[in-house]
Amino acid sequence: TSVAGLAQEPGLWQISALGGSPRKLADQGREAAVSPDGTQIAFLKGTAQSQELWLMRADGEQPRKLAGQTGDLFRCPVWSQDGKRIAFLRGVYRPGTYGVQPQIEILDLASNQRLVVSSQARLGEAMASSQARLGEALAWAGDRMVYVLNETSPSQNDSNLWSLKIDLRTGQPLGPPTRITASAGAIQYLSGSANGKRLAYVKEGWQPDVYVARLEANGTRLSTPRRLTLDERQDFPWAWTPDSKQVLFGSDRDGSFHIFRQAPDQTTPELLVGGNEQSMLPRLTPDGKQLVYLQYHQAFDSSDGVRMMRIPVTGGPPQLVMEVRGLTNEQCARQPSTLCLYSVSGNRRLTFMSFDPMHGAGQEVAHIDDDLPYAYNWSLSPDGSTLAIAKASKLDIVAPPAVRLLTLKDGKERTVALKEWSSVNAIDWAADGKSMWSALPRLLAPTPC
Image 1 (cartoon, one colour):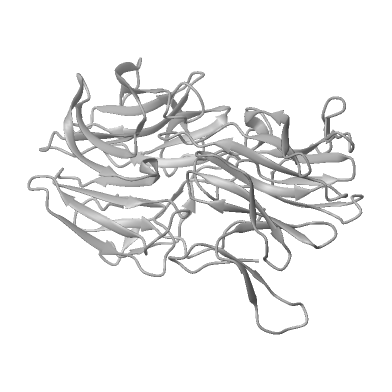
Image 2: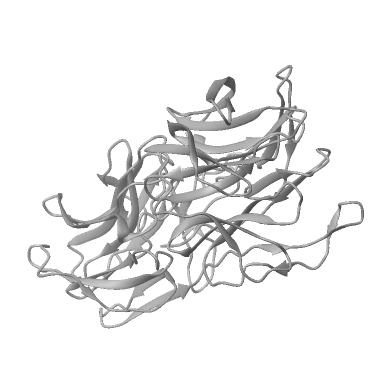
């Protein structure tokens, strides 16, 4: 098993089913896979940007590296039934991006040769971090490799099982892949029986929706939330119209993410921004007359050029504000302030730039140097005086999460520590600029393979 404290590297321990004290096998390691005969353990080591596949005896002795170069990311090592080969998912970390294209590889332990048996983006969610899923699950069932494949739009939130026949003598794939399941929901865990004849898996659905609630007790408590979006797709709220009568949100209800608006007493929304591209993050300009939003060439990959667009709040044809590689977020203050900011992730730095919604980019306001620059949430105060910044990643924890408050006029900074929480999922200023709202999940165990 893999065990780690809040600020520790995960280590591998042996725990007897009959009781007794646990025994440490390795100082570092996770996703341990025991060989069919119980004599060896394959496991992963490394950081958020560079990982390795290792092998050791079941007692922790004779550890040795099997595979892994700078930038490699691994997931889900599994053994063949004869214990001669190990299959796994591998990708390559690319700084400044959210993902990689994963591939299934088989390693022959005798020859140390690796063979790619499948390579495609639909193998699963791909994010550049140490414990994110390059592919969601993998199992070796007899002479078949079983894996999870994401569906295409508009069913991109669903995934199903596929299998590929493997020549057990050579490790080579035999014939085309075969679909095993065809149902709604996403497969998160997959396990094969010892004899390779049965599979167990968990399928779940994730459906974020927009809710509305009234502020009570001087803005310190919410009334009972009421669901606004009644569809069965993904919906994310981003802002209100200037008169506070309609919610602006993104939804993939018609395939790609588009921008809608809807009043709390309405049952169906009005489309503001459609098209074939993914459009998200609508924000009001300081005068409240325009919306700026981000448009992606492909599924939220900021390594490609991201377009910032604008459109009148009342609707109309969109206009290009700028196109920037690595653009991750944008937000404006309210009048009398005219400040608008956007952030750019790249080269281990998150840079905050000012911009004019009508004319484009301005100048650098601040920056953060970090190995995971894209993992930050931030929010500009309504008066444009303070920038709140929080690291959202749960996968690179070395200290309790915190919100950093940067005063833009003089560059002074203070930190609000958030103990007993694993991450800050979202932050946003209250309308009066005197407090903030945050979504704070409690500390969760790492997702098993």
